[in-house]
Image 1: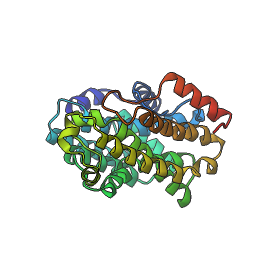
Image 2 (image 1 turned 120 degrees about the vertical axis):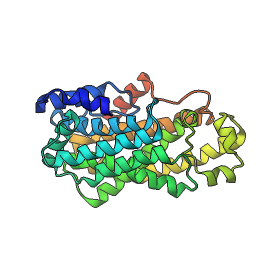
Image 3 (image 1 turned 135 degrees about the vertical axis):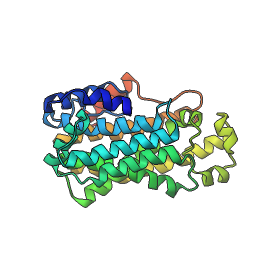
Length: 294
């Protein structure tokens, strides 16, 4: 974090340069689901990139190798200090220069950003979850603020729509957990509820050694079904928003459902290969979304 601070603060960033910095950071990262894609109105993309750059950088502090847990927390705390600075006009980091304008234009509450930082700190300090409710609580901070931020940037503020968004975002987060079980095991992280693992007779040592068993298959099938229910609970949001956001949301919703389908078709063996969207998947989702098929 200190190295980044020195490099970034050596120069003075114009507003345009700050937003371009955020856009470069956004489009340089691989994601399952589109971020600030061409399906969105052009006048909104740079603001979405500013929010993404804030979250992406914080996520890197929590996840990237080479830092101790204490250093990760220190970096996240420093990132939150800069978040506070951007409110009083003293931001010097391009991410926060762009973010300050985004917050001001769309009247975004700061708690949404602080919730994200809380979740990133939790990634550093918590590697096991006893109950499914504990995982859902994590999603309230890690995923749900993202959907709410997007809605606010399109001036959708009804509580019903925000609740629908929470269901979809939680489902997307869970989907990401299930597809990344193998990767998280390498980081000694388990998002499968320990209570569920016991119920299905699958032990932690087997997961950390990436052992695929019938018990694991049944366990993950149970979690996938739960996740699909959450996608369905939030599906009404797709018809509530206007054309400015509907295509992007439909692509994202269908992308999450397609990942779950892929997990099912591989008999839940996510240890063998990570299920992800291919170019053909993305093209098919776009065509079905554009012409409202399915």
